[in-house]
Image (cartoon, rainbow, N blue to C red; front, side, top):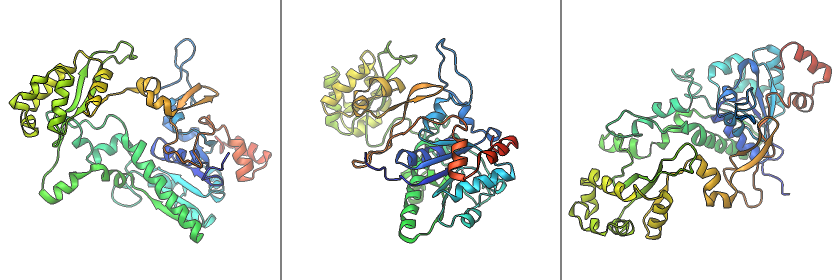
Length: 418
């Protein structure tokens, strides 16, 4: 098997929740050895967040190792329990950093102050270290110590103001979107750039990725529109200025969809020809001759009536049938898929084998998100399931830090390795 591109690189992962661990998992997927530093004294709360694995009797498993949320973001890592609130714990943490190529954290600067993890301190023991800091609002500034997650970033960055319907309050995007895509992706990109720089010069460096600033660039045209025209864009539901109909339309219920029988299809007609094709495909050819809907401008002017008409065409049909019928006529359309569709029913996802199934000692066999990109010569993959809390404490202390068995026993007794 070909060497993975990041083999030989060690990552000291001092992050928690989503944005940091997902980025570190990407590095692990492509070969890096990622040492996840955790502690029961400051537990990553994602370890106790649902969904939990089930017992045979249908009850939920309990403990720190059964969260599907946590496990999906930490596959392929090593876990050491280390109490960084102690002086000796900080010393051990620094020795891990000394033996690493990359340091990652998304804790606030206040925690970095407390644990003595500033770049100058890391650089003193490892001049080649690439240190990536991703606090919510940056290392400096009046809001440096503000704590927040994706659900906080979406309103703070203006995404929520653009999300939802104009007659309703801002609603956000329904998930901690910045934690999964934007922030970990940009952090990994910055780390790879810093690695290339180090390969050429031998120099490590510090990366600061304020999550606030990383996220605001997804506002698209909103900031430019205000700058150029003084216009503040607001919520527009599912509608689009250059397409009509453009939205999600109710279809017939699907009794085979687990606990979610309601089904929807999204449709986007950008041209008059697409609108005519939709009317013919869904059995209402006369609607194309209705003067209220003859052109895009007409359809936009009568969009409420248009949406009601399209909804009447889709309401009694299966979502998959509507999608396939419209796509065959050149009309953009797709089923609004749920988790069951993605994991079990989508033929494209099954054919590409995106989800990777791994065996975990406490949760059993489960699906994990696969590699975010596919390299033809060195494809990434998860080499193991997520670690149980502290599963590799002995291995990391002996192999990476260089402690003896007696030294480890003493640190366990003192509450440093906990």
